[in-house]
Amino acid sequence: MNKQMNEQELLACFDDAVRFGHIFVTYQPKINHSTGRMIGAEALMRWSHPVYGMQYPSDFIPVLEKNDLIYRADLAVFESVCSFLRRCLNVNITPVPVSVNMSRYDIYRKNYVDEIEKIRVKYDVPVKFLHVEVTETSAIGGMELVSSVLRQLHEYGYMVEMDDFGSGYSSLNVLKDLAVDVIKLDMRFLSGDIGGRGGTIISAIVQMAKWLGTPIIAEGVEKLEQADYMKSIGCKYIQGYLYSKPVKEEEYLEKINQLGHEPLTPALDLISAMDAGKFWDPSSMETLIFNNFVGGAVIYTYSNGKVEILRFNKKYVREIGMNMIEQEILDTDPFLGMDDKNRQIYKDALERAISSNDEETCETWRKVCSKTCGEDDICIRSFIRMIGKTDHQYLFYAMVQNITAEKRRFDEVLESERRMRFASEHANVYSWEVDLDTKIMRPCFRCMRDLNVPPIVQNYPEPVIESGIFTPDYADMYRDVMKKLERGEIDSFEQIMPLTVGRIPFYVRYTLERDENGNPLKAYGSATLVVDEEE
Ligand code: C2E
Ligand code: CA
Ligand code: CA
Image (tube, rainbow, N blue to C red):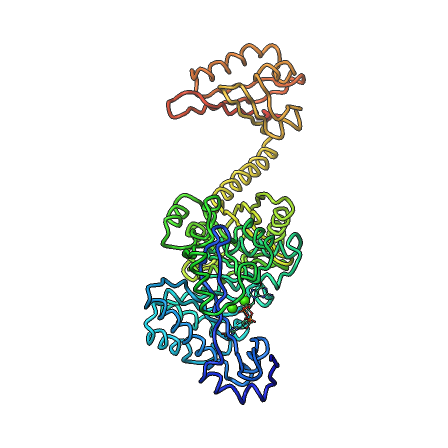
């Protein structure tokens, strides 16, 4: 007979339950859906009361948590798992790693990690056979505490799985702050509509996990089509009723036998190898290649008009960061350094990338500031691509180039041109340049404005002679000068000539520019109005 116990009954029976093993463990396999082999299992707590029958976690765990007893149940589960693994090892069965749940209340217990470690040592189980599942909601109590618990677990060598990812509390950003080794994505939180909103969120998370190089396990998978869909977007690890309900020890051993097992590997495939998470592992070969042959790259999220950097490579630091240290870059909102105009330019590019699903480019100025170098203005050209999205958040990949020097040179040219115009306006100077190889002439704006010369003149000087700017009686002499410049026979030329049909006297000058071998390149011409001082 099964009867759900109330709080009083649960509390009254708890000591006995622990002592007499009424609280026991069931195992649910985790499967590689591509091969059908087992990659691990999760230990799930059950309570079988001698009179009331089977009790389920949803009924008694909240009660134990509320009464500060959950840690005792969890330690009992951990011990039972260690004991099981030891028995396997004793009869030469290579066990698959078992993950044990850690309540968020366990995190508040100072010595919890030391306590489980003591149990592991007592049973002499290699740490590689034990994983710890920490639920995403643990982060509610503050990142620092969870981070330090994860650090402790890692120090002892436990792999950490983030449980219930997608349950709503955290965004993708939690992933970068918490060093988890495996992500468990609960399909039940994203019920039903795989083709719609749920599917978009799922694929963004899988994408993100790939970028981080973190394997991802879909749990609560009941239907084959769910498993196939997950595999199609790059998540081949499955836990759920589709393969097996949680089962008792004996049945679990049969399953290992029947299915076979293999190790869990990061979610990388060849196609995505170039952009996958290994690039963020500082010791990998990919990182070496990435850092040396690819330019500055950054991954960030964009939501509600805000950008948050998740990852960047070394060249990114060089392109953008001056001497900023990594943390300074991660902490800097990239929009902060931009004025309204530049921020808008950048946002427009992001919006374009969202709607085009293609690479978009923009150039923006921003202020950067570092402890070592102080403040500076830099101009960045960004090539932006959207790589994932949820209903409220986008994930972007951007390659960046620092084009400040290029921009400044261009500005200098603009500035000198502006000064030239200003000067020529006052000095009545007309100027132009002739490419001697192609016979293409480019006039200054005054030539264009006053003399109707087009911006580019081919086959110079014929069209200008034809138009009458150079008068017919000077035409041959002028052609001759151009020829001499072309052949490099003269380096300069000066003469007063009547120009235009009005035969206005101008002082016409040429200067020749040669290349490094001494061959003629360009001729710079000018015409200055001759002012008769005596008039
Ligand atoms: P959980 O950690 O997310 O565990 C997965 C739950 O989903 C389990 O429920 C499992 O039986 C169930 N499940 C697995 N596949 C499917 C499926 O295809 N469809 C559906 N509908 N459900 C599936 P269970 O065993 O009832 O445990 C519920 C929760 O209780 C667990 O959620 C976990 O948060 C907690 N829990 C279980 N064992 C322990 C434990 O030893 N310690 C602690 N602190 N919490 C535990
Ligand atoms: Ca779990
Ligand atoms: Ca879960």
